[in-house]
Amino acid sequence: MILVRRWAGVLLVLAGLAAYAGAAPTGWAYATTAGLRVGVADAPSAPVALVLGAGIGGGRPSPLLARRLDIAAELYRRGTVRVLLVSGDNRVRGYDEPTVMRDYLVGRGVPERHVVRDFAGLDTWDSCTRARRIFQVRRLIVVTQEFHLPRAVALCRAAGLRAWGVGDDSSGAWPGPTAAGHAREPLAMLKAVRSLALRPDPTLLGRTETGVAEALAEPRR
Picture (spheres, rainbow, N blue to C red):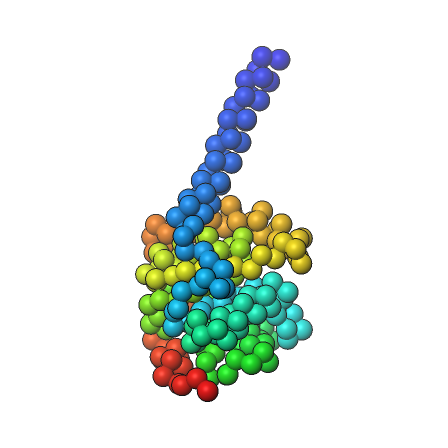
């Protein structure tokens, strides 16, 4: 019985340490990005909005991704940003996240010439660092859900970008996916710690692309 109690105490300590290890990086991300996460009306002017992928199906964006794209389109309409960089996965035949994102934005009035696709945004770090290294962006607003925003802003800043974030509060319309997103974030933040510390190359690096610069040179009409 004494041995059982001792092991129970050890397990409780280990569980507490594991919980702290998961919560501490997330708490750090929330604290360090607090002044950089803003609403659409308060977003500072920036050349580019980076929209992070969140899944597609049947040729349409997922509900959470659609909300990100709606916010990006609103930032464009307000003149807060001039170009939308849509970053997602295109590794599997028949799964073209960036093109679906572009088509959705064009359908909501954003000129196609002001939407640039990044086909190798395989995760948040890759999207941020490719925006900086491949597309030569220096300053941007990253758009995602609010539960993801602290990690996204922190990673973009670590990638060398002057980044702010605008997030969608998806809890009202999509409580299930939002709760799942909140639950996933501590584990995702543990993965992000490696990127924050080591600043690795993205999974796919490649050559510099001029799409953003060319889109910025195009006048608004």
